[in-house]
Length: 195
Image 1 (cartoon, rainbow, N blue to C red):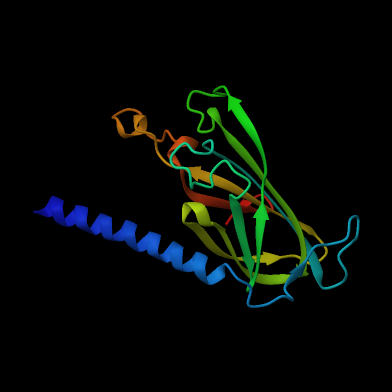
Image 2 (tube, rainbow, N blue to C red):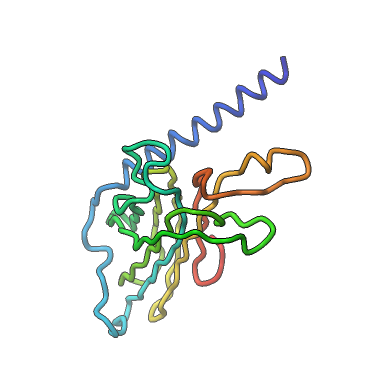
């Protein structure tokens, strides 16, 4: 009886998390403002009271059609959603085919797939901002509050957190993840510090 109750509670937590992510993605997919950020001119310095934010991220997905014909993974239609204080932008990744050998004992990005590179530079007012980063095709969304320092070029790095492999579910093989299993989260680092 206790095991069933525990299993039911775990299932409710997972379903609740998915519903929260879906609502966060829907709410932040369109802009409610258009004056929060702009793309800076090449080589320009941020004026007084403003700062630049350079967003970079790299992730790997399976090839197109691996799971279904309507799946956007591995195609140019796979996007990253960014919303800062109500202004939204969809980032298109630069993609390339990649078949990499394991670089370490357990390499989560080893194998044949599609690598995406997301890069965007924005200029916005220095200070505190609410940011939402999402992968709509995966139902993943992260909401954080960040503080950007005036005059600096701030760096926001997005790192995927891949799902566990069937190997890691066996005793003695904890923590093994792989891009082929999908993405379960996004880790954010601002100026070298996790947020």
